Length: 394
Image 1: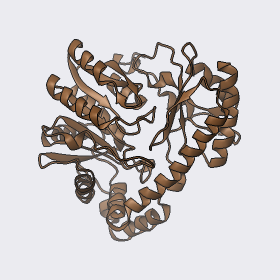
Image 2: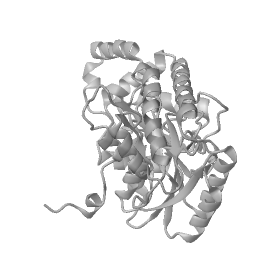
Image 3: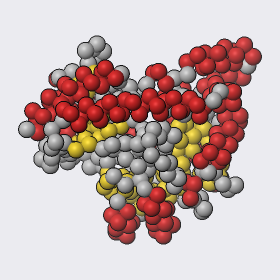
Image 4: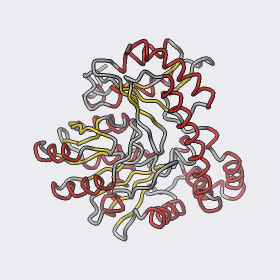
């Protein structure tokens, strides 16, 4: 059987493969990117679901429009405009099947075979694979505690041919957990204007801030329709409902709509209706505040345990929000080897190579998730992991 070049060149997501590990009650997972089940507003969603089936079952179970359920689009536009300053009068919004679809469709409408996309290094594996699937050349720019290195970014924009997109997760980046400074956000937008490229701002975590001051989105500073903002309800309602959205210029949204029509026609209408009802009649901001409190406690617990038990040779990020902490061993050590040893000790992590634009190299990094495990699991899991890490790095 002969498959297309496009799909044959893709590898399975390392994270998805790790999650296929048979259920073992003694296994502690720091590998997932899942929200905590305790963060799901189950009681409210249960009541809303019953109401929808009692009053609007025919509509909920019917086809919908590709742009999205109008009440959900309207309330999302209002929230993004009034709370986050993201949308202008020249912008529009489309509801997508998760934030992942917004990324994949952006690649579909902008990229030709061989075009370059400048990505943070490391970057979200789902985005990297979506970009690869359209034949993009991935050009990495290193990330530090203040985000993408804008000096390297400009050098790449000067020297690389056919650059179409800059891809970034500026707030609570996946996998590092870091946040791009306001100065660098402005510089990214300035460089995008200067070199005539688009910016794909991927922000599934930006409302999950549990310490520090909020930083304006790049999209909120966009005056010329240069930025596509990809958002999601996965981390603040639930990932299983598969509801994301993209904010961009009206011209871009019209192209994304066509792309969606040939992809999945429309996002699950029942869950769009459920989300719209929740956002209209429940206090989403109070709900997000509870999630942030929960994640602050978990992140602090993980950091405290790592400070006590990890070798000082291992450095790790200190996120102000989101779901992740990234760990860096000394040069020469391999995150994939560490992940293999950790798995044998009944704790899973994601090796840094999973987030690399060039997955043929060795990376001394690995990612931890603190949102899913319980406090007890965090303590026991870091104890196991520390023994593995300290034995490996010496």
